[in-house]
Length: 391
Image 1 (cartoon, rainbow, N blue to C red):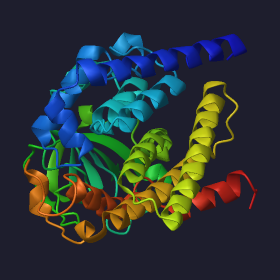
Image 2: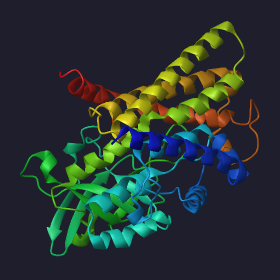
Image 3: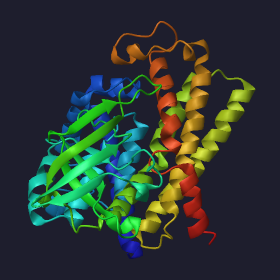
Image 4: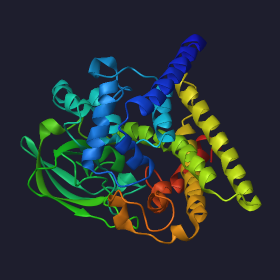
């Protein structure tokens, strides 16, 4: 990419940021923004309202090619979009349809799959979940054991997926399955699209310490899946998984989330010398993270990345966010102890502390997992050691 084209992408990213700021003031429903900024629990209806709002702005799948309903955003524009939304405390852009399976389908799927699934992702008619992790196959995803056996024009799928976010809401599951056990583990994996209404699927909630139903076990017991729902080639699922995971880890920088939490910490904190020093250190690290993330995005934009940038920003971003969240809980004082998970589902104020006290504690609890999901910190360090240090 030429310097001129890169400069144009940077200018478009800044215009997008300005449009988002206006949107948050002029178009964003106050009740939804308040609920999100206070870290209250959002239900499926909230998220669908949010995705419809983004669709109306032309932002829901802005990073997709124009041929499939997107705006053809550059990597930099896409990152700026999510960053700016997070800085304003907007809801999470749930990635499973728009960021993960959608790009896999339009890149590797059949024409019939594109026509069937992509419009319903754009319109939020279908809610997707991601069937990757299994017991014993988390960071070591190639060890997955869920099996798909060919039976005529169907596969029979049996196994278990775990930590499946919002599977209780999902219409569809994009799933990695083993279709061949006689080859290298990575070469025997395929990518299937599974209707969650299929007989043989059982969803069981996994309790988490934030008191909110995010994640699930998904059991598949001889589930029949049409062969037409195989994306790309049988045995090539590892290629598609790496394509998708690169998107996931790039999103792990959490720059906007860190800045949003840091702004709340500055407003909440008592002006003691020790806390001022701590906030100053966190702010400097947040600035360094932001610079690193945007340099990584520009490197990707210009085709000069070394392959390890996503791991670096995921590692630094998640660890910094955990530290800022922990400082926020400490800043609440006694209100950080008065934890009431049920209050996260109500609009009334908590009995102690500011009205976002419960949400601050919830986020702190939930994001203890941020250094595990999307590729653990240990895995990211291994990637950096190989890609940068040559170890």
